[in-house]
Length: 323
Ligand code: VTB
Ligand code: MG
Ligand code: MG
Image 1 (tube, rainbow, N blue to C red):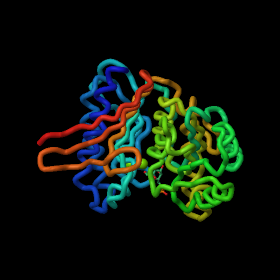
Image 2 (cartoon, rainbow, N blue to C red; image 1 turned 90 degrees about the vertical axis):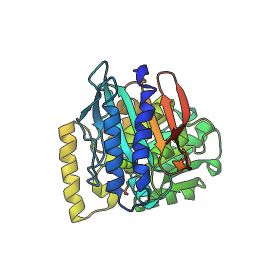
Image 3 (cartoon, rainbow, N blue to C red; image 1 turned 120 degrees about the vertical axis):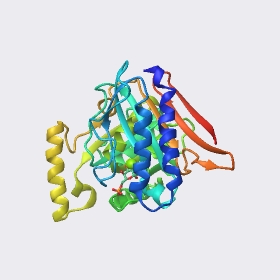
């Protein structure tokens, strides 16, 4: 597995580079399509029997590296792959910050098979490990985290997403005096920022995509943080409606087929069963986590974060691509 720790960063680099010329084009499917093809091509050169277990695209019907797709050149080890060719296609399409190309590798059969639906996620850094319980209220969790970190609620910094479905939670946190940082999009980046040493945030709490949740879990596990997650149905995330109920019904069916439970607390060790994790993210547009792609006359510069759960290291790799 360790032999993939170098090649993995080229996979997200290539995807980010392919999508970047179309940043700001307004069409997220164009962005996604470019990143997907570049990623697939690069993955197929790697010495592995890779299987996509977390892909993306069902919620927004984007071109995808589909679940079950086999990639790699078929040699050596069998691995599970969780991928979001562009995490934040809307940001990339609209020229907003924080879009990343992301991938994670883990040994075969160690990643949670999440359907593409909404997931409630709670992430903390290693100092607050073991104190969270997603089944309790947000207030209770904020109190527990503050206690674990030995700081007052008024110094606690929570990162989340600025979505209507989180309005009540944001108000609840603010009511306790907690400082809230609501990103437009991108809870993978928000979660990594929470787990980094010298972390900007004490916790990440949100309702976002389940595939992003498993990708996040890979990074959190490799960084020795903690996380819990709960799949929630469409109506719980978006409010009740006739159409929503139809979507929710199909989600229940899908979950039954995949043998996973809605409204059940999944622990980090259930989301990712192994410590042998390789994770890579390349900035497409600049954000809090990584610088986006930039260009001058002769070179294009990319910045990539590689998290290695085997070695327990994180590396930031800045590459100059000569033309
Ligand atoms: C979520 C979140 C992602 O998009 O999938 C979100 O996990 C989609 O939210 O990080 P909406 O359904 O409200 O659009 C991201 O923020 C970016 O991909
Ligand atoms: Mg995507
Ligand atoms: Mg995404």
